[in-house]
Length: 319
Image 1 (tube, rainbow, N blue to C red):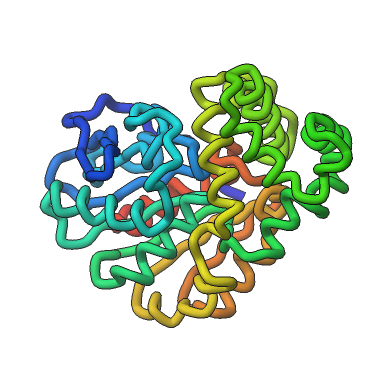
Image 2 (cartoon, helix red, strand yellow):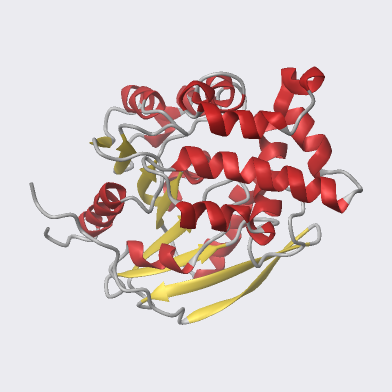
C-alpha cells in the first residue's frame, strides 16, 4: 500500500475580504493558491463550523485557485452566530455571489459532512457551474440521519459521551433533545447559552474521530467555535436542513455528467457509510472511495490522503 499523502504546505491568501450578501449578513472570504489556476470552493462543515488555516492545504497551490469562506454566522463572518436569515438555500445563493465575484465560469465544489450536504444542494440547483464534486462524510439531512445523531444510534457507541450530552437536559425534555438544546442556545441568559453550546459542540467533536483527539475537543469547547456551531447546527436540525425528506437522493439525477469523488471513513460514527452508499446507488457515476481505517474527521490520515489524491487527480496530476 502506498504511503499516505499529507496536506500541502499552508499558504497565505493572495486575496481576502468581506462580501455583503444582504439581510444584514457579511461573509469573510479568502483565496489561496495561484490566481487564474483551476477554480475550487471549499465548504466547511457544521452547519456553523467555519474555515481554518489547515483547510487551505487540500489542494496543490500551484494548480488551484481556491475560495474558502465562512458561511453565515460562522468564523469571521458577521453577525457572529446569527441564525436569522440563515438557511441552506441562502448559502447556496451566497456561493453564486462568490463565484461571480471571482469571475469563475465553473468551479470544483469541495465539502465534507454538512459541507457535502451543501455541495449537493448547490450542484443540484446549479449543475452547469460545477466542474467536479469532491465530498467527504456524506450527510443527506434525512430523518434517519438526524435520529442517528440525536435520538438513537451514535449514542450506543459513544455511550459515556452521550450521557454527558443528554445529561444537561432534564429527563422530562429528553424526548426532543434538539429542541431542548435550541431553547437553551437562544436563551437570554448567557451562561445557559454557553453551557449548552459547549455540550453540543463536544458531542459533535467526540463522534468526529476514530480515536480520541484531546486537541480537537479543546477547540470544540472554545466558545468562539462552540457558540456559532451549536446555535446554527441546532437550527438546521430543527428545520430539516431546509430540505424535503430525501430531496438530495431524489434529485441525484441532476448530478449526471458531473465527475465526483467521495472519500468516506468506514468507521464514521457521525455520518455512517450507508448514506454514501445510497448516494452512490442514486448517482452511479460517482467514485466512492472507502477508507477502512478512518472515522469522520477531515484531519485523519486516511481521509487527508484520499482528499489530496482526489484533488490532484482532478487537476490532472499523476500520483
